[in-house]
Length: 136
Image (cartoon, rainbow, N blue to C red; front, side, top):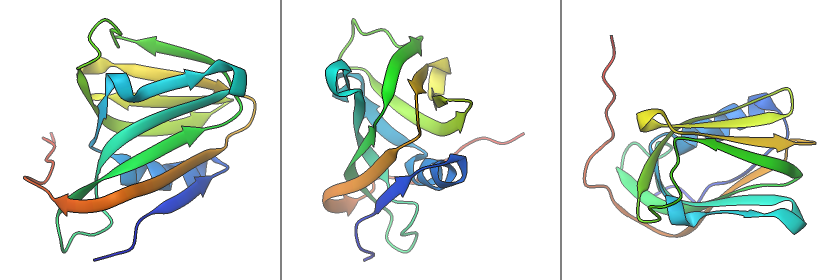
């Protein structure tokens, strides 16, 4: 089994690597938090371990963004904290981190500088199924 992932992103290319590792992460809506005074946004996710294809598994991971000035969301109703989101991609351009979720939800983090950290926490467990996407 491969070791836990611990990566830092400081530009769009770095974030593309983290985004690939986060594709299909399950994100409980209740496990997102913006700590305004610290200018920090964090997500606790259930990450599919694309980096270990020999042993399909998931693990808990933390994804943090520093230097966050403002957070916007679209179609992410905070009234249902038990809702689980499926993270598709995370991108960065012109001071904005954009996270896209299945079912049209999105999150925009306005940052003065890109600083992201992805860190696996805890032990992986066998995945019930590998995520699949329909292609045209």
